[in-house]
Amino acid sequence: MLVLSRRPHESIRLTIPENLPPGTVIEITTLEVRANAVRIGLTAPRSVQIARSELVDESGVTSKEAPDE
Image 1 (cartoon, rainbow, N blue to C red):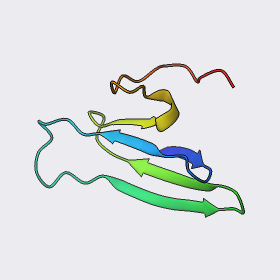
Image 2 (spheres, one colour):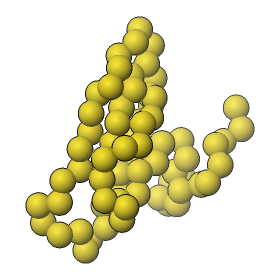
Image 3 (tube, rainbow, N blue to C red):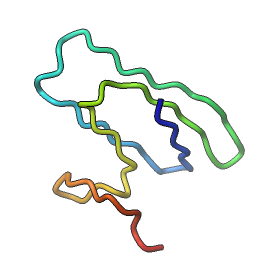
């Protein structure tokens, strides 16, 4: 399970490959809710790309590093 924390207006992007068999399950679980953030657990096949939206550029390419803040 991949666990990510998200604050208001932040998102997670799932890229699902076309060859994923019908009926494949992707599970999203709310693990914890705080005043300013939520912890989300994601379980999916390895072929599903999961990325924090700030790491994906306009063309859909995922960066390996977090952007400078």
